[in-house]
Structures are given as structure tokens and as C-alpha cells.
Length: 302
Image (cartoon, rainbow, N blue to C red; front, top):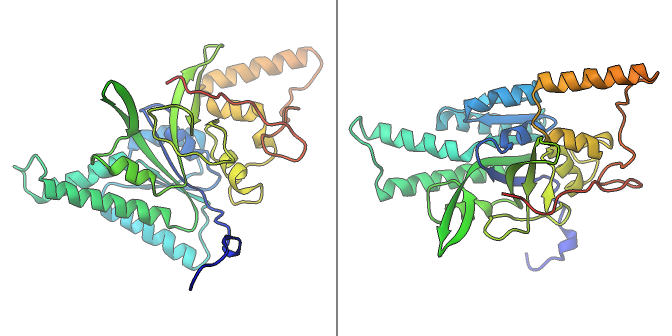
């Protein structure tokens, strides 16, 4: 074939992202913000979050490697027929998937088997790598979620995806073009907010994209729009790129509390002779022709 100018290659307009974080950091919530997600759900406890955030999300419960294989085959066949209704596939989570693999190997070893041999751990690592490669190669946006773990080397703190295998977290991150760390903190109003770190803090395994801020709002369609433009499948609309909308997506507000706040705002507006505004902020979207970019934090307070 020989050397070919880079400009002659087609543009890859599908996001391949690894996101990891502690329990409760908003990973499942992030995945459910996708416009048309197909979610491979290994962690049943995330069902409540997904139903509340996106009741139309398509969920395939994963309890075995056979379940995962069937889902991958189904998506591949749908794409081959050009009939896939989903823009994004989400694996929630890779940490739990590794646990499922471990249980299957222990089960094969008999009831008395409690630990894995070095060779068996090698098999698990190879299978996890194959799973990640299979997801990454699907012709759609891909978001793989993972729990986080920390370790200390010479008193230096390191935060990585929680996966057994010394080199596996770094190796897995290498399969993706973006790697983020989800976290939560309290803002000045006392609200719990969620953010995703992509660059800038030593000790965190991250991989940035030039179109994304160092710290982003946890809204998947906004990332798609920033990286691939407004016409990309599953990209956010102009209204969804406003500061108000993105802030709302990043806050953990119970439905009852949100309903009460909306009712109070409506009552105040009607008392003043106005109707409540549901329109976009004048600040506009972060990526647009004539609208300003919303301010994002530049450092995670993890």
C-alpha cells in the first residue's frame, strides 16, 4: 500500500470513551444521558438511576459472558442490515464484567475452589481485553464505564480504573481516544454536582480530546457535539448546550425536590404576571456560531 497522506483517510466520527469513578460519582447517569443508548447493564443497582434519567433507554441485562456475546452479535447484525436504532452503546460496568468472568471460572473449578491461579487470571485479562476491543470496534459511539481505585507509590496517590491486572488499567485506556474521571462535589449553594475530569491533575489516569474542556459537564450528547459537530448522531441541540441545561444535568436533585422548586418558580412568575421561561439562556451553547461557551471548572476537587 505504501505511505498515504493523512488527509485522504476518512474522519472517524464515533466517540470511543472510557469513564471511571467512585460509586455514586454519576457514571450510570452519564451513560443514560445518551440520546438513543443501548446499555449492557452488569450492575442492577443502576436501574433506578437509568429509569429516572432516561426511561426510554434500551437495557440488556448482563449476568454472564453469554449474555454479553448475544448483545454484541445482535448489535453487529443490526448494523450489517443498517437497522440499528441506537447511537451509543454503554457497558456498565467493566469492573463488574470482570467479576462475572471470575465467578464463571471459579464455578468451573468446583465448589471447593476459592482462588484463581496465575494462569486463570491471565485468561480473565485476555477476555476483558477482547470484550473491550469488541465494544470499541462497533460502528457507533461507545462509552465504557468502570469503578475507580486508588493506590500509593512512594507516597504519591494514583487513581485508576478498578481492574485486576497490574498493567490492565493503562492497557484498557489505550483502546479509547478519550478517558475521563467522574467525581462529585458540593457547590456554593450546597447542591451535589457532578463533573468529569479529562486533563490537568497529576495522579489521575486521563486522556484528553482537544475539543473538550479539562473538566466537562456529564452530558454525553454535549461531548458528541463538541468532538464531532452538531450533525453527528446523538449530538446535543443548541438548547441542550446552554449553561442552565448543562448545570441541571450535572446536579443530583430528587424528583420531589425538583418538582417543588419548579412549582415555586411557576407560582412566583404567575404572581408577577409572567409565564415561566423554559427557553435557553442568553449565554448560549458552548459550541455554536454566535453563542458563548459555558464556563466549566478547571480543577477537580477530588
